[in-house]
Image 1 (cartoon, rainbow, N blue to C red):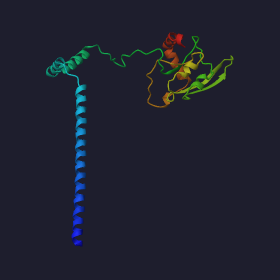
Image 2 (tube, rainbow, N blue to C red; image 1 turned 180 degrees about the vertical axis):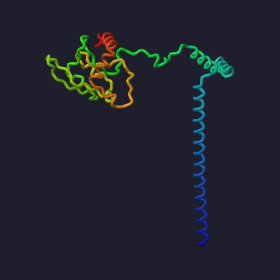
Image 3 (cartoon, helix red, strand yellow; image 1 turned 30 degrees about the vertical axis):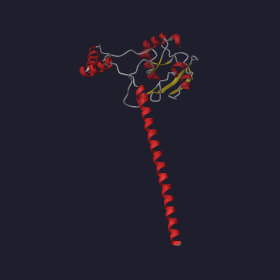
Image 4 (cartoon, one colour; image 1 turned 90 degrees about the vertical axis):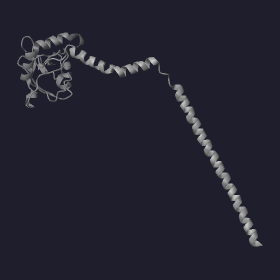
Length: 221
């Protein structure tokens, strides 16, 4: 009798468990169908919004694009541009036989100037030496027999110079200037260590152009 009761109890428990499992499976399937339906509806709405944002292409634009592709208009336009540039006057110059324009404010090779009497302008105030950010200028000075203060040494290390123009701006008598010459390349480092004689010779050589440049810029100095 007890065995029959136990078997009936087991059958009841098994049937109850199967019902619970089947109900859970149905709920999961319904949830999956709901998710799939929701994703599909979202995709449909996104596609509809994308289609709403698209502007219709006019037949005029379609014919223009087709003609450009068929007749190769962009390629012919590029050929025309090349021929047009080839027929224009050349803007290059035949350096060194031809040289371009140089601004009066160009800062090139340094030079020491003289007065029209031939006396050197530098009064050895050493303002240029103090103003030089690269410390490329070295000056020694002494008083002459007539009481004038002049330099006995004026050296510029051109390899240190950054061509800022501070020395030229600091000089109260326009003695040290940066001239228009830019062709002073050398083969050795020693040739770029300028002394007083070299600077004075540069000034004598370029004095006419230097004076002209200073006069043209006197309103801005």
